Length: 150
Image (tube, rainbow, N blue to C red; front, side, top):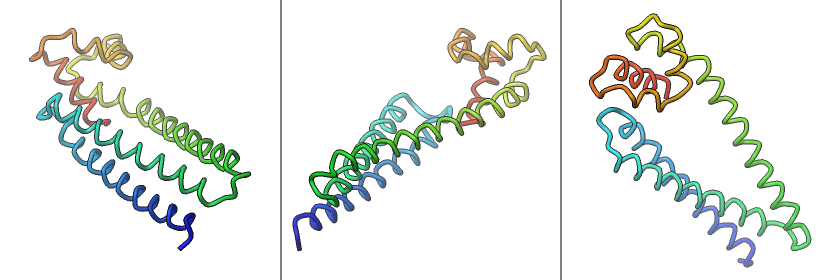
């Protein structure tokens, strides 16, 4: 087996391991983002997702670089990074669209008020929610709205 093929096979295993670690972090986040979750579980999920994403990104880049001649390494690296950034941009745009569509509706459904100015303030700043006491119905409703959309 040539060194290029061996490197590509190892990178594929690294990619699979990275994606599985990231998937574990995402699955654990489903519990951690609820009101039963703790700061520790949120941090653990973020660490797992970061590690998995790092493994996946590096192994993808190394596999692409190993598959081409030395003269084309810069071009293939640029293409991998370009596709990564385009994917991130599309994902952010979709997430923003979902957030803008559903969050105001969920706030109106969960927060016990008809004051549109208050709902706009809660939509515009998550830190405004933290100013309410822990057992305040407005704070509880806003948290439920965030959980419903996320």
